Length: 59
Image (cartoon, rainbow, N blue to C red; front, side, top):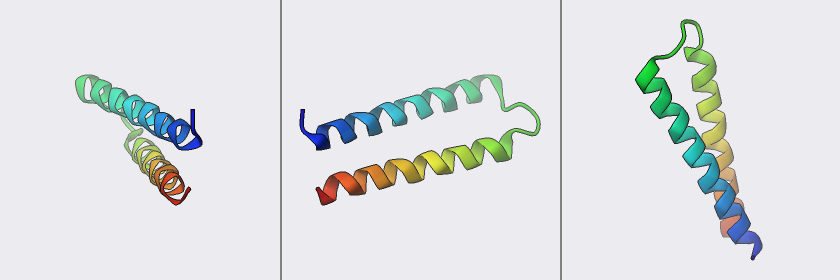
């Protein structure tokens, strides 16, 4: 497996996990006081995914 394939697989796994989390939160609602923390986490994961994809493209 090439290094780019490993990065792509990691990105897909992170994306699918975040999608699962979002779907559960939509179904059950966000616990009171956790909205800000969840938004920060979502933004951090988005930044990580973008960096991994840029790294893959450069290599």
